[in-house]
Length: 203
Image (cartoon, rainbow, N blue to C red; front, side):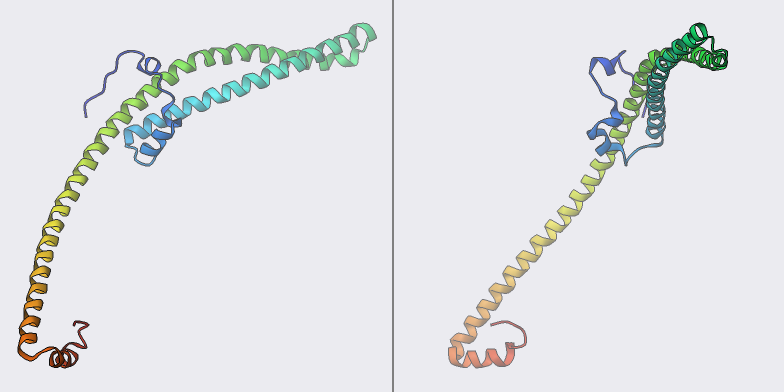
């Protein structure tokens, strides 16, 4: 199938959610992915995992930053007011860690700002591959349905022939019974039925 082209920003404009999280997509495609669809899904999963990891790291660093700032204030008081020189290494370690956090947080924030656009772009790629796969499956299922219909037609024709044969046989049985009944009567016929038909499950 040729490449699918959408108008710009179709995901946002049509309010299309993250496809791999939607129940309908999971039901229809999670077990019927083409190679191209699987590749785009893996790319989307990687971006979503990265976003989640960045958010978790940001939250943890901000929490740690508050702890360090309180710690530095406390140690600073010990050094300045209590002349506790033994607290200086602790101060230096806390300041070093805080510096690292202050350097890391802007990088995380920048990533978190750029990731939504990348996720949107990758979700669009998943949408394109999903549509391609949908049309492949539609064709396959239509072909299967047509084949089933052909088999149904054959079975229906055979069933009609069998019903016709059954009706003809039943009519023949009734005519034969009527003939024999007219010749010998009911009593004699009952005896003959027992002798000739008792093992056949018939009259």
